[in-house]
Image (tube, rainbow, N blue to C red):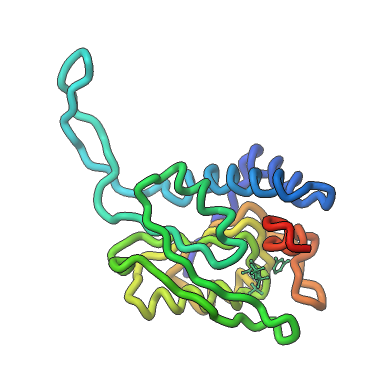
Length: 209
Ligand code: PRP
Ligand code: URA
């Protein structure tokens, strides 16, 4: 079974509280999401392998560590997942970025695919899928399936807020994918919104409502 990592670092929790506040505007919301993504990125990449390399400091030659092995890809689920990309790119500037476009049908709440563009060698990379909201889990499950159909075998899901229903659905459908969250919220409401949540993440990032 996959592991659920809840990043309860005080700075992450503090920033998330400001994001939840309905008075927080798009500019601050975006900046906070980017900052949290970078902080969560430390945990998501905690076990990437290192190798020894010889370098020369201004003082002498020495052996030092650098990241080795698998390269990284960041795959946001459009739109809201885009808000987490820059924070992760600050941490791993050489990562490649793919995009999966999904939106939830407002009546059925089922995800609809409208775009998919991924790095050519995505199957050789550690893939971090980003989406701030894990509600029913439908969007995340479909995105993970699309990546597996393209040969990806090492995938992590990084969200901000998750509902128990969505977490359970992803864990059942994709037991090989670890999930990283800043908070596990209480439940979904009748419109499949997370309670207490933070509202519609896409609208709050892009100011569309
Ligand atoms: C939101 C969110 C997730 C999805 C989560 O996107 O960013 O992708 O809903 O819900 P689920 O777990 O029930 O699938 P939305 O469909 O509103 O699209 P948007 O990002 O373009 O606004
Ligand atoms: N999508 C969002 O943006 N927010 C929710 O609470 C659920 C789905």
